[in-house]
Length: 448
Ligand code: TRP
Image (cartoon, rainbow, N blue to C red; front, side, top):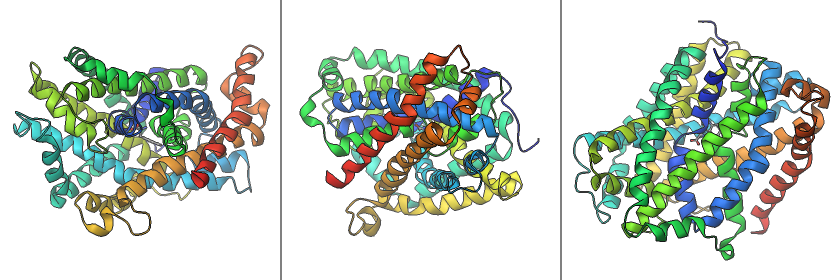
């Protein structure tokens, strides 16, 4: 296979981009953050960020990718030669490597829980027992390294096979199945006695809980969940055919991603309330509550197995997109062949993931970094998964709004005389709304 292919169909692009977007960010990160920040307020700020910031930036990224047919670094270089803008591309490539390292670890947890379910270790799970089960699981360094390694290996193996071959096929079949399983869980959670309290937590905002840190994390979560801010959508857009509509694809991808995250909340919070668990359980939140849900529903073991397996597949479609950014850069810019690029980047990512493994294993210096007071893993997730993506999105919007010529951008997006109204809304967003809102939110880091 050539090192640069094209998506074979428009649905192929939408499913692969949605595959990148939908992952453990929706089902693990979104619920635990919503729980941590007190529920509905976080949900609303997050939704606002998706619409106001996420969608315009996604249009910009896909258009930049398709216009140039390049990786993030190459795209900036081609649109603005001999400038420092390519640094934004480099930031993205590095962020891809960094996020891949710890994202693969959490993805490995889904495999771990699949096997736990298979071995019957989660049978009879109670709210008292699951936290201890998780603690023992995550403290097992050997097992964690194995899961991390296995996940990165799987990712690298698929990416090494090229674009339409690996990614597209997997997403096409499996994503819809995951959604069906989530619908079943949704029905289960909403009909539990006591579920109403959870719904109230999730939907009734208490605005006194607004805080600068919360707004930063909600914005970061929007970029993280939509796979924005580091050029993943530039890279995926570079494989998109010219006659596909970018705004329409964006609406689909953002819509599917957001529905999945919101749906995860509708499962987790009612269940937490019904079983009397706190929503502020932190990172392991969904791994604490899901086994309890499965254990007390008909065919629970079967659903549990399918759910963890498909969540693993959803995570895989996301890790593929993270690695693809790094690979596309090494292939285009460094002229490496695909397999060298993929295996070297995958190997490096594994090494970078080791300190994250150790932070959960309770190795003191990684569990609580000196000075910052959070674990190495939490530091990675905040610095790369939240800050770097927000900074990336800030620069991408400024670039698309001011540096890239309006006529060229509009032509690429497909806004001639017909889409002019939508075009001016987009231009206003990337020129003023996104830069100002993102910069103001980031600035709160220093005051709040
Ligand atoms: N969006 C994915 C999720 O929600 C994670 C992800 C994949 C990602 N590729 C990305 C995040 C690129 C940022 C950038 O699980």
